[in-house]
Length: 443
Image (cartoon, one colour):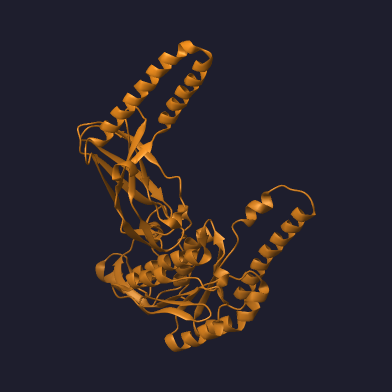
């Protein structure tokens, strides 16, 4: 019974059998075709038997292993490696079907190849997870193809493995790399000009061409008989909190990823940069109620704690309670801090409802409101069409874009820092704003 369940008929079996049936039908009209067709049928049966013996004579001809990183990065390409080992002295032609996680919704995944005796084949494929959580890879189904192509033997390898999809570590490391590389400007990261002086004195060093002449230390220069200049560094141990709105306004998807996931990826990237700048970083998630809270710190495991909390966050299809957010911040954050608020306002009415709370928060701390612009509007505006419906849609889009600009101007007029960005550029734009605030010494 087990043998029959592992037996599958190949496409060539049906093609040849269909041809034989047609020949038998033709033999009713032309009797001379009967005996050649009968011989063809007997040969077909013999080849079928030979195929079965060839497929099932070795007990375990093939071994398969799956190798991947323990953690996947959200919205990035993640590599999966499949190794096929031939344990027999027979060359094989095969097909592979890996039972992928249900979140990927891929139902036509097939790999094929030929393997030499005692050889090893390597298959690499990539997945692009669009949601956080546990992804379960189940069995790998191997179909060995007979020499004549009439039969296939199915061998199931129980390689069930679970992988956790975390906020994008790759994007976080890329942002850190671009910060310290000469190609940073090509990726949108700006080098901000420092306005004024930091209060953190670092050292007195030898003057070099390009140093600010105002920082020349004349007493030290006279003592060393060469120009010496004072060197300052960014203030350290400043407090930075990322506030993430998990309400229904963050459910909108772009390129298969929700605004919440874009905010989570950006929050991880900016937290890493702030920790590299020796600042203390904390996290607060909210919707209709306060969710995850992590007090600001710069200890060694702070970034890992942030990542674990971000991994567990889920959207809530309810309105955000900004009054509750204000009370929580008052109780949690006692010193003036930088608050980076990830949210989204689709209309000026939505902003007006929470504007009094935002003004209070900005009075106590330095508030940066990060919200999104619709990246699909540009392509729609550039599209060609006609009719009342098309013109009406164009007018609505232009009005929505104008509202975003008006909301940004209103917040800036009230002294509230803003970042408005397309979802895919969110991390870079937020890092730029953080660097600008550090350079201007606003906190």
